[in-house]
Length: 217
Image (tube, rainbow, N blue to C red):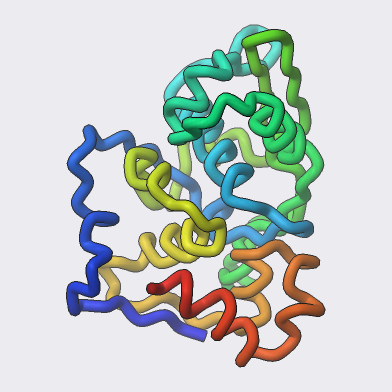
């Protein structure tokens, strides 16, 4: 399944021309084109990107932890609710998600590991949140060889998880004009999580109608 880039303005131009100050970081393709092994929603995706941005810009402490104030993280990801418990729960969920890395790469170009947790350790104490990054991916997070610039000032505008995931998947190929071909089932699992759509979207027509078309619109 290949996704062609649209050239006609369909009202989504604001996603590409942001009035806010750009807040981009280099997101490794191994992570960008990964497949979560369980459902992954919008909030988990936004938090993951925020942590990846932080880990790529700042050094951890001597024990390998990064620390952020929860209120600061909430502002950066565009979380404007007072429901801090929801935010904490979403952060904790990330510690349990196993990812299969770079699933659209050819077999000869696949990375040496197959799957791992991206954030193996997460701690929340009062207003502070601390996290660690997988040792298998730390080098790629800190200094990726192949990457896409992901702008958090754009990402925080999204209100649906599939839209967020499809946008980022396609953004790496924006200069190419179309994405690499991938089986639709793989693409479904990448943007929903491997177990999320297996029953509800076992046929492409349902996935297209309920997920793909609304996300593109």
